[in-house]
Image (cartoon, rainbow, N blue to C red; front, side):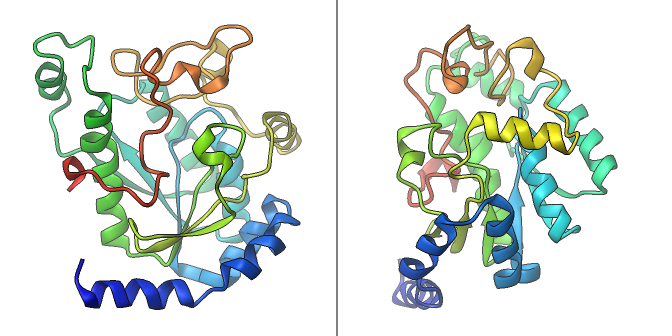
Length: 254
Protein backbone atom coordinates (compact mmCIF):
# COMPACT_ATOMS: atom_id res chain seq x y z
CA UNK A 1 0.00 0.00 0.00
CA UNK A 2 1.30 3.47 -0.90
CA UNK A 3 2.03 6.13 1.71
CA UNK A 4 -0.79 8.25 0.27
CA UNK A 5 -3.30 5.41 0.69
CA UNK A 6 -2.09 4.78 4.24
CA UNK A 7 -2.48 8.47 5.08
CA UNK A 8 -6.00 8.54 3.63
CA UNK A 9 -7.01 5.56 5.75
CA UNK A 10 -5.41 7.03 8.87
CA UNK A 11 -7.24 10.32 8.38
CA UNK A 12 -10.51 8.47 7.90
CA UNK A 13 -10.10 6.41 11.06
CA UNK A 14 -9.16 9.47 13.07
CA UNK A 15 -12.37 11.27 12.12
CA UNK A 16 -14.43 9.20 14.58
CA UNK A 17 -13.42 8.28 18.12
CA UNK A 18 -14.56 4.66 18.15
CA UNK A 19 -13.43 4.18 21.76
CA UNK A 20 -16.04 6.75 22.74
CA UNK A 21 -18.74 5.88 20.22
CA UNK A 22 -18.92 2.11 20.69
CA UNK A 23 -19.68 2.15 24.45
CA UNK A 24 -22.49 4.61 23.73
CA UNK A 25 -23.96 2.44 20.98
CA UNK A 26 -23.77 -0.64 23.22
CA UNK A 27 -26.53 0.97 25.28
CA UNK A 28 -28.78 1.57 22.26
CA UNK A 29 -31.18 -0.71 20.46
CA UNK A 30 -30.91 -1.38 16.72
CA UNK A 31 -33.15 1.59 15.81
CA UNK A 32 -30.92 3.93 17.81
CA UNK A 33 -27.79 2.66 16.06
CA UNK A 34 -29.41 3.14 12.63
CA UNK A 35 -30.53 6.65 13.59
CA UNK A 36 -26.98 7.49 14.70
CA UNK A 37 -25.51 6.14 11.44
CA UNK A 38 -27.91 8.14 9.27
CA UNK A 39 -27.21 11.34 11.21
CA UNK A 40 -23.47 10.70 11.04
CA UNK A 41 -23.11 9.66 7.40
CA UNK A 42 -26.27 10.82 5.61
CA UNK A 43 -26.32 9.95 1.90
CA UNK A 44 -22.83 8.45 2.22
CA UNK A 45 -24.32 5.49 4.10
CA UNK A 46 -25.20 2.30 2.21
CA UNK A 47 -26.26 -1.13 3.37
CA UNK A 48 -25.70 -4.67 2.18
CA UNK A 49 -28.40 -7.33 2.12
CA UNK A 50 -28.42 -10.97 1.09
CA UNK A 51 -32.25 -10.91 1.13
CA UNK A 52 -31.90 -13.95 3.35
CA UNK A 53 -33.93 -15.51 6.14
CA UNK A 54 -34.39 -12.43 8.36
CA UNK A 55 -33.13 -9.65 6.09
CA UNK A 56 -36.44 -7.79 6.12
CA UNK A 57 -35.75 -6.50 9.63
CA UNK A 58 -32.64 -4.43 8.89
CA UNK A 59 -34.18 -3.25 5.62
CA UNK A 60 -37.24 -2.09 7.56
CA UNK A 61 -35.12 -0.32 10.19
CA UNK A 62 -32.96 1.44 7.61
CA UNK A 63 -35.66 2.52 5.18
CA UNK A 64 -37.82 4.01 7.94
CA UNK A 65 -35.03 6.55 8.50
CA UNK A 66 -33.41 6.69 5.04
CA UNK A 67 -36.03 5.52 2.52
CA UNK A 68 -33.73 5.61 -0.52
CA UNK A 69 -30.63 4.16 1.07
CA UNK A 70 -28.57 2.22 -1.49
CA UNK A 71 -28.83 -1.53 -0.85
CA UNK A 72 -25.99 -3.64 -2.23
CA UNK A 73 -27.21 -7.07 -3.35
CA UNK A 74 -24.59 -9.57 -4.49
CA UNK A 75 -25.76 -12.06 -7.12
CA UNK A 76 -23.25 -14.91 -7.07
CA UNK A 77 -24.94 -16.73 -9.93
CA UNK A 78 -26.02 -19.52 -7.55
CA UNK A 79 -28.82 -17.89 -5.57
CA UNK A 80 -32.12 -19.68 -5.03
CA UNK A 81 -34.94 -18.54 -7.34
CA UNK A 82 -36.85 -17.85 -4.11
CA UNK A 83 -34.18 -15.33 -3.10
CA UNK A 84 -34.69 -13.34 -6.30
CA UNK A 85 -38.45 -13.49 -5.80
CA UNK A 86 -38.09 -12.37 -2.17
CA UNK A 87 -35.90 -9.44 -3.20
CA UNK A 88 -38.51 -8.41 -5.77
CA UNK A 89 -41.26 -8.70 -3.14
CA UNK A 90 -39.45 -6.47 -0.64
CA UNK A 91 -38.35 -4.10 -3.37
CA UNK A 92 -41.95 -3.50 -4.37
CA UNK A 93 -43.29 -3.28 -0.81
CA UNK A 94 -40.71 -0.75 0.43
CA UNK A 95 -39.75 0.90 -2.89
CA UNK A 96 -36.16 -0.21 -2.32
CA UNK A 97 -33.12 1.30 -4.02
CA UNK A 98 -31.33 -1.98 -4.80
CA UNK A 99 -27.96 -2.02 -6.53
CA UNK A 100 -27.25 -5.53 -7.81
CA UNK A 101 -23.67 -6.57 -8.44
CA UNK A 102 -23.07 -9.80 -10.34
CA UNK A 103 -20.18 -12.22 -10.40
CA UNK A 104 -17.89 -11.79 -13.42
CA UNK A 105 -17.84 -15.58 -13.91
CA UNK A 106 -20.15 -17.85 -15.83
CA UNK A 107 -21.74 -19.89 -13.01
CA UNK A 108 -21.82 -23.26 -14.79
CA UNK A 109 -18.30 -22.89 -16.15
CA UNK A 110 -17.07 -22.04 -12.66
CA UNK A 111 -18.69 -25.14 -11.17
CA UNK A 112 -17.00 -27.39 -13.71
CA UNK A 113 -13.66 -25.65 -13.26
CA UNK A 114 -13.74 -25.73 -9.45
CA UNK A 115 -15.24 -29.21 -9.24
CA UNK A 116 -13.01 -30.69 -11.95
CA UNK A 117 -16.01 -31.74 -14.02
CA UNK A 118 -18.39 -32.49 -11.14
CA UNK A 119 -20.90 -29.60 -10.89
CA UNK A 120 -22.36 -30.87 -7.60
CA UNK A 121 -19.30 -30.14 -5.48
CA UNK A 122 -16.78 -27.38 -4.96
CA UNK A 123 -13.42 -28.48 -3.67
CA UNK A 124 -12.36 -24.95 -2.76
CA UNK A 125 -15.27 -23.05 -1.26
CA UNK A 126 -13.05 -20.20 -0.09
CA UNK A 127 -11.96 -19.58 -3.68
CA UNK A 128 -15.57 -19.69 -4.84
CA UNK A 129 -16.68 -17.12 -2.26
CA UNK A 130 -13.69 -14.95 -3.12
CA UNK A 131 -14.40 -14.97 -6.85
CA UNK A 132 -18.19 -14.95 -6.91
CA UNK A 133 -19.23 -13.11 -3.75
CA UNK A 134 -16.39 -11.04 -2.33
CA UNK A 135 -15.11 -9.66 -5.62
CA UNK A 136 -18.53 -8.18 -6.52
CA UNK A 137 -18.82 -6.70 -3.01
CA UNK A 138 -15.37 -5.15 -3.25
CA UNK A 139 -16.30 -3.74 -6.65
CA UNK A 140 -19.55 -2.32 -5.29
CA UNK A 141 -17.79 -0.58 -2.42
CA UNK A 142 -15.15 0.86 -4.75
CA UNK A 143 -17.73 2.19 -7.20
CA UNK A 144 -20.22 3.54 -4.66
CA UNK A 145 -17.43 4.77 -2.33
CA UNK A 146 -19.58 5.18 0.81
CA UNK A 147 -18.23 6.46 4.11
CA UNK A 148 -20.06 3.65 5.92
CA UNK A 149 -22.27 0.63 5.36
CA UNK A 150 -24.88 -1.13 7.47
CA UNK A 151 -24.57 -4.89 7.84
CA UNK A 152 -26.77 -7.44 9.61
CA UNK A 153 -24.20 -9.47 11.56
CA UNK A 154 -24.90 -10.66 15.12
CA UNK A 155 -22.45 -11.67 17.82
CA UNK A 156 -24.03 -15.03 18.59
CA UNK A 157 -23.64 -16.27 15.01
CA UNK A 158 -19.91 -17.05 14.75
CA UNK A 159 -16.72 -16.72 16.83
CA UNK A 160 -15.50 -13.99 14.47
CA UNK A 161 -18.68 -11.98 14.92
CA UNK A 162 -18.60 -12.39 18.70
CA UNK A 163 -15.62 -10.01 18.75
CA UNK A 164 -17.16 -7.30 16.57
CA UNK A 165 -17.96 -3.75 17.67
CA UNK A 166 -20.95 -1.68 16.61
CA UNK A 167 -18.73 0.55 14.48
CA UNK A 168 -15.43 -0.65 13.03
CA UNK A 169 -13.06 0.81 10.49
CA UNK A 170 -12.65 -1.43 7.44
CA UNK A 171 -9.36 -1.02 5.55
CA UNK A 172 -10.74 -3.49 3.04
CA UNK A 173 -13.58 -1.20 2.03
CA UNK A 174 -12.10 2.13 3.15
CA UNK A 175 -15.33 2.72 5.08
CA UNK A 176 -16.92 2.19 8.47
CA UNK A 177 -18.84 -1.02 9.14
CA UNK A 178 -21.94 -0.38 11.27
CA UNK A 179 -23.74 -3.38 12.82
CA UNK A 180 -27.08 -2.36 14.40
CA UNK A 181 -28.22 -5.94 15.17
CA UNK A 182 -25.03 -7.01 16.91
CA UNK A 183 -26.55 -7.73 20.34
CA UNK A 184 -29.90 -9.09 19.24
CA UNK A 185 -30.95 -12.73 19.48
CA UNK A 186 -33.05 -14.71 17.02
CA UNK A 187 -35.97 -14.42 19.47
CA UNK A 188 -35.73 -10.61 19.45
CA UNK A 189 -35.48 -10.52 15.67
CA UNK A 190 -38.55 -12.74 15.37
CA UNK A 191 -40.55 -10.55 17.78
CA UNK A 192 -39.68 -7.39 15.82
CA UNK A 193 -40.63 -9.00 12.52
CA UNK A 194 -43.93 -10.21 13.93
CA UNK A 195 -44.70 -6.77 15.41
CA UNK A 196 -44.14 -5.08 12.04
CA UNK A 197 -45.63 -7.85 9.88
CA UNK A 198 -42.34 -8.49 8.08
CA UNK A 199 -41.90 -11.64 5.98
CA UNK A 200 -39.17 -14.22 6.35
CA UNK A 201 -37.49 -15.62 3.26
CA UNK A 202 -39.92 -18.14 1.69
CA UNK A 203 -37.49 -21.01 2.37
CA UNK A 204 -37.31 -20.21 6.10
CA UNK A 205 -40.35 -22.34 6.95
CA UNK A 206 -38.81 -25.24 5.02
CA UNK A 207 -35.84 -25.44 7.37
CA UNK A 208 -33.39 -23.12 5.62
CA UNK A 209 -32.52 -20.89 8.57
CA UNK A 210 -29.48 -19.20 7.00
CA UNK A 211 -29.72 -18.80 3.26
CA UNK A 212 -26.89 -18.27 0.83
CA UNK A 213 -26.20 -20.05 -2.44
CA UNK A 214 -28.31 -22.98 -3.61
CA UNK A 215 -27.80 -26.63 -2.58
CA UNK A 216 -25.49 -27.33 -5.53
CA UNK A 217 -23.21 -24.79 -3.91
CA UNK A 218 -23.52 -24.43 -0.16
CA UNK A 219 -26.89 -24.14 1.59
CA UNK A 220 -28.74 -27.08 3.15
CA UNK A 221 -31.68 -27.54 5.50
CA UNK A 222 -30.80 -27.18 9.19
CA UNK A 223 -31.64 -30.14 11.43
CA UNK A 224 -33.60 -29.90 14.68
CA UNK A 225 -31.46 -28.37 17.42
CA UNK A 226 -28.61 -27.46 15.07
CA UNK A 227 -27.05 -24.02 14.85
CA UNK A 228 -28.90 -21.91 12.24
CA UNK A 229 -25.69 -21.35 10.29
CA UNK A 230 -24.82 -25.06 10.19
CA UNK A 231 -26.60 -25.29 6.84
CA UNK A 232 -24.05 -22.98 5.23
CA UNK A 233 -20.96 -24.69 3.70
CA UNK A 234 -22.10 -27.82 5.61
CA UNK A 235 -19.33 -30.16 6.70
CA UNK A 236 -16.53 -27.89 5.50
CA UNK A 237 -15.72 -26.07 8.75
CA UNK A 238 -16.24 -22.77 6.92
CA UNK A 239 -18.38 -20.20 8.77
CA UNK A 240 -17.81 -16.92 6.87
CA UNK A 241 -17.91 -15.99 3.20
CA UNK A 242 -15.43 -13.18 3.89
CA UNK A 243 -17.57 -10.11 3.18
CA UNK A 244 -17.75 -9.26 6.88
CA UNK A 245 -14.08 -10.07 7.59
CA UNK A 246 -13.18 -6.52 6.82
CA UNK A 247 -9.41 -6.68 7.20
CA UNK A 248 -8.64 -9.45 4.71
CA UNK A 249 -8.48 -9.44 0.92
CA UNK A 250 -7.81 -12.51 -1.20
CA UNK A 251 -6.07 -12.25 -4.56
CA UNK A 252 -8.99 -14.10 -6.18
CA UNK A 253 -11.21 -11.14 -5.31
CA UNK A 254 -9.19 -8.53 -7.21
